[in-house]
Length: 618
Ligand code: BES
Ligand code: ZN
Image 1 (tube, rainbow, N blue to C red):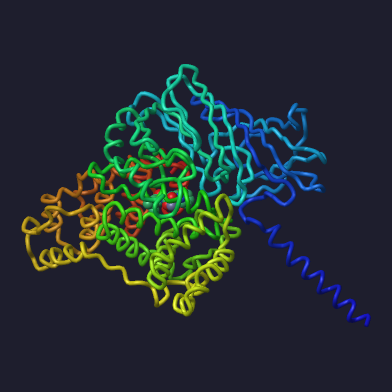
Image 2 (tube, rainbow, N blue to C red; image 1 turned 60 degrees about the vertical axis):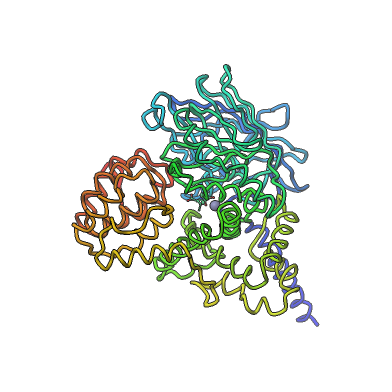
């Protein structure tokens, strides 16, 4: 009896730890303990100092606490905390520092009284705050005024403001932002469309958002509307070109709504940033931040806008619970993006992009041959920088899984499911496990045998590409194949039928080029197709890679210029990686990087520094 009682007690003890542990391990990349005390609303009152390269002011948080919570825990990194007050009347208050971690930053602990609902933190960013990129005037299109933009995903929000920096924690916000009078400020919120003469801008975001979607940009910026709900912001000299490129934005929004239900954020605008922006795009709510490298002049690279727009459902509405579930954000978004593309530009066009995506995925899978765990959809990034897990696996393996589901149960059934999925989990978090049980209950139960065919668990918890991966073919690339074969058989580039090729077809052509092409044939391609001097960044990037592989040095001066001007990580990495394969290449990489590095954002620098084994001051 005694033994039995003890056993029961021990079992209960084990069970209780089992049920509390997942709550405590809510997000391995945040110190927040939302079950104890969690933020709900933010009022930010800050001023932007271009001289000091800092943002300072106060972050006033309205919080919710459990009865016995005696503190609230915030993530911070490279912030100076000046003082803390408590309650609406702002009584001076105390705070302490907790864990200090190289990746996660410094835990800020504010004790709470039993009835506390407001804490205010007076703080300042530092020039080391990685979310911010401060550009001097020479790094802008206008060359007259400096520029600031922020990038918070994945865990850089904590370098911009003290916050509970976990995608599972949402808050609404208002902000007053003071900037130099000749500039305009924009946020992931309701935005001004014109400069005012006070330099103070007020912002409101009434939908709750996670901290990684917080965003600010300040500079010489103008607005042009495209339809009643969409528009574009850019530096004045870039505005017309941007508006031309994104002329279909309103149609994209309408196509998206037709697919998966109403757009819940009011307006949808795009801000075109200077070329050092480290990503293609970032889905900041109401205001996508975008690289100017998608301005090809022929609207051929606008899928990026469809992608960021699609995040208004997958990601911003239904949000990955933590970065291990990143594929729920990106895989769904790529699927949604290609459906928008198909609706607007046809299946042939969407197929080309799916094909290029699959090629990219195959390359990434090769890179991870020795670390197969990194190729699971569900990741284990605990203890690592989440940035390390952000590669094409989540995007393209995630896409392929959704395509497989579509092909197994039919498009209508998947569309109905997705519409309901977004609707019933709007403004909530999603874990991989919750998604699995939801799809099993809501969808697979109606399609006997579908689950056995799809093998969801293999896709999510096992490495590589399962054998049932759909084959992705492209009609338009068959045309490229034919012309490419002619060229391989010795035909002159002039004789190839390339007159109406899309950017994607050129990319496919260039990707196919073998190593060891003679300098004469590379020169001939370049002379006729003008790859080295093209204004299309995607084509230029693909060509520079082939130029490196084939030692075609006449392209290098163009590549050098490209690498110094453009800070988009997706373009930089393959080129530097290729250069690092030879001694002469390494020298070239170091020479270029020395000049280019000051123009790169922290996340791009971090990746290239590691690749080149770069030490400051070299
Ligand atoms: N949310 C991502 C960008 C991101 C991911 C930033 C992870 C930081 C960490 C954005 O939606 C994205 O996927 N951008 C892609 C473009 C897209 C068309 C695949 C990019 O920047 O290349
Ligand atoms: Zn994305």
